[in-house]
Image 1 (cartoon, one colour):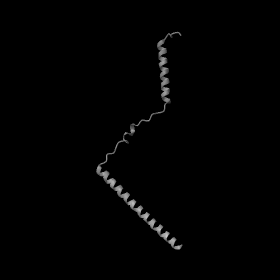
Image 2 (image 1 turned 135 degrees about the vertical axis):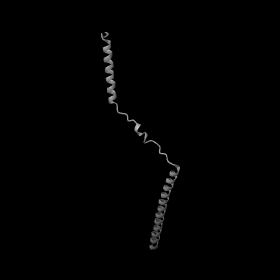
Image 3 (image 1 turned 135 degrees about the horizontal axis):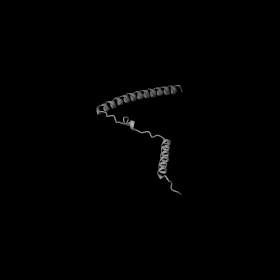
Image 4 (image 1 turned 30 degrees about the horizontal axis):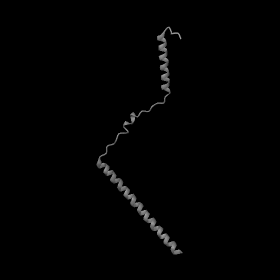
Amino acid sequence: MKAPKDQGLVLAIFYSVSLVAILMVWLLLPPIVSQEGDEEKTKVKVVKPEEAIQNAEEILTQAEAALAELEKKQEEKTKAGKAQASKSEGKK
């Protein structure tokens, strides 16, 4: 192979074609989503112990009330079921 007369021009063309090829590949790649804006969302909220205890007590009070209501309904169902059973036995 013969050496080109203007080697600088060949070198410039080679680098230009390589640069265009690299840019085309970069354009075809999918974008990367950065997590820079999510730093504010991931911050930990500082809670005072007194507030945490108060919130826990409120939740426990609500849970106890709901449990008592469910137990009351269960007892009513049990009493109603026993009453129907005794009525049906009395008919036989």
